[in-house]
Image 1 (cartoon, one colour):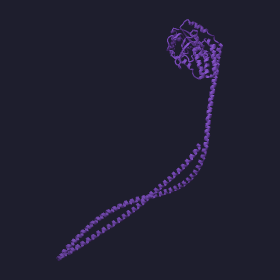
Image 2 (cartoon, one colour):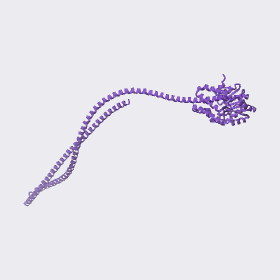
Image 3 (tube, one colour):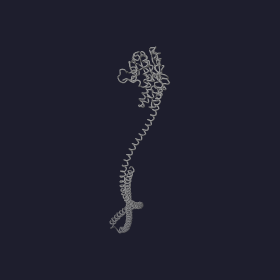
Amino acid sequence: MGVDLQAIAFDHYQRYGAASAILSMLGRGDCRILEVGANRQRLLGEFLPKARLLYTDIRVEGDEQDFIVADATALPFQSGEYGAVVSLDVLEHIPRELRAAAVSEMGRVAGDVVVIGCPTDEEWVVQADAAANDRWKELFSDDYEWLQEHRDYGLVNAAEVVSVLESQGLHVVVLTQGSATLWESLMGLHFMKVKFPELEGLSTAADRLYNTRVFAGDCVGPCYRTYFIGLRDEEKVQELRDWWGTRGASDDQAVGLLGQLASGLRELALRTLNSEQEWAATADVANTHAKDLEVATREWSATIRRLEAAEADVAKATAGWKATAEANADLQAQIKEITHEWEQTVALFKRAQQDALNASEGWKQAVDACRQKDEDLRIALGEWQSTAELLRLTEQKAAEAERDRIALADQLEETGRESFVADRPSVVAAEERSVAGTEMNNESSQSERDHAVALGFVDELRRELMESKDALNASMDAIRSRDEETEAALLARDTSDSLREAVEKEMRDLQARLEIKLMAAFWRSSNNLGSTQQQ
């Protein structure tokens, strides 16, 4: 089943309707035709069913015999190979610096005629493009892709196209078609159809109205699209110009209807769009409220669970408080007991301190006594050393007296032997011996007396020495007694220090036990209170 050409989009009908009409008027509607940059619908073949067509583009889909990949600037065909070459709305999508090459290649391959249709760089065309892009942007908040390329690459320079075609030996006719204002309005209608598919039927009806009642005469005034027709036959030039202006009349009523329809639908579309945006915003708010409600529901459920858990925790806390109260009561009793022990320990410590103080005072007195004894001992030692020296001298004198006595005794003994030998002499000798005996007796008596005095002196010295020794021994005994008293005082001081240290240790241990018990009770109370507060 063929395509209903009267129902296709007006913009496509403008391009292919005009190109096919020109070729048919020139008698080339059934020749071999090459379309450069064709679309996938193969619309040119629908308008020229008797023609033998080959379509090219920079990319193709599938394996199709009548559609090949070809670069417009280097067509893979011989010169004049095709009777006609057609390119519609292609040049404005080719970079500016490559357009001359593309036009030249089309002119080279064409045997009889070249038809190039495109929007050119005219003020009203630029304005129409901008207005149409604004219509798209109103609906989609972005630039329309194909119109964006018009700005990126720039619109086509008409003079350049004419010059290149003429350089290929072609006679050029320039024709225009499609009111720029009407084109912009109808493009806006098509954009609205994309946004609101419900307008598909109305848009198709508008296209059919344009295609059947407006298209043929829509070539007056500033037009959106320009056709460059390059002819090998110069005689066809004027004939084509004359035919173009007389091929149909404009239906002003249809044009006005289409303009009003596009304008009215635009207002409706904008209102609908605003309503949709408001509705979307309302929906977002509703969704937000729904989500908030869902969150609130979850939080409420969680709150209920937390409350139930809290009730259970309160029950546990109550039991814990009771246990804590009981523990506190036990703790109070322990504290009371510990306090009593503490008071006893303090009293003991005070007594120990007093004992230590007394012992310390006694120790001080003992130390003073020791110091006095040390001084007495030092004095007694000096006296003893003096006495010992005197005794040594006395013993020395006694030894000398003993030696004198022994010498005297030896002398007396020697004198007695001499008297015995002279016992028998004469009277003179007897008298002499009597006188001598008397002298000897006198001398012996004197010696004995001297010896007795010496012995008495020695005995006196020995007695004094013994008395000094006894006094020294007594002093030593007194010093030993004081030493024992000092040692006892020192022992008492050490005992007092040990007792004090033991008491202090006992007080520290008691205080540590009290602090541990107090901290344990405080910890249990804090834990119970913290658990209750968390619950």
